[in-house]
Amino acid sequence: MALARYKLVIAYDGTAYSGWQRQPDPVPTVQRVVERAFGQIVNHPVIVHGSSRTDAGVHALGQVAHADADTHIEPERLRRAINSRLPGDVDIRAVEILPNFDASRAVKKRYRYVIWRSRQRPLFYRNYVYECRFHTEISAMQAACEHFVGTHDFIAFRGRLDERQTTVRTIFHCDIHRRGPFIIFSVEGSGFLYHMVRNMVGTVLAVGRGHMPPENIPTIIEKRDRALAGQCMPASGLCLQWIRFEAPDPAKTAGPLPD
Image (cartoon, rainbow, N blue to C red; front, side):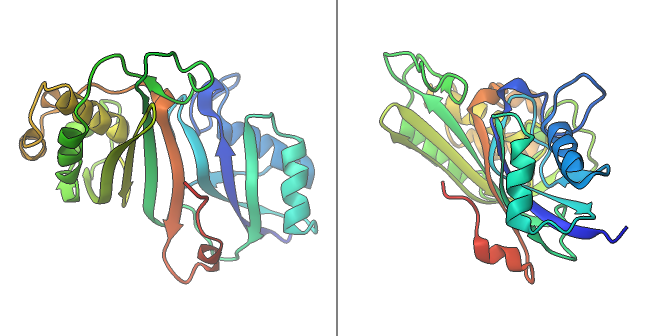
């Protein structure tokens, strides 16, 4: 077979899935359904390598993956054909041929966590937000976010199932702001540990509730103690927004999906 390397940008509602990464049948995962649909179109098995292993229930607007396939179908027709075989909660947003593209070589990722703060229930957003029923001080939360920026050992914010040896990550930007009933936490980093973003949000929320001052963040990082950080927030509020790759990846000209 004459295999070509394809880059895919994938969006999905993670509510019904046990995360991105393939697991034994019948556990539903995004990787599995994309591989099945892709394979049906090109008539041979396809392995889709994702850039980010999102957890169960986590959503994505800009997951990026690569796959090798033997087909003469041009990329846009291939995108539409794969989508025709996918369930309604997964969408291939872009397909292009990039001979040397490797989805594991990301240099920056952006996640967003959305908190709902209102007297009304989030009827139409309930699968995409965390419903907060208590007062939070946004200025204190923003001050806490600023302490995450830089290169640090984030082992205190790592989930217990994460077995990666290196826990040092670089955070380029971290911010929180309110927009109507939504409190939006955004973070850009070189990479993230298992549950890291959800644990960061739980810690920032603890600051917002007055359970700790913003200045505790550097202490938590320094002491490397998970018990000092906040709770791990539910997956529903988390969304992978985009992933960027270093030059000379020509796909960067297409840019990430908008916020």
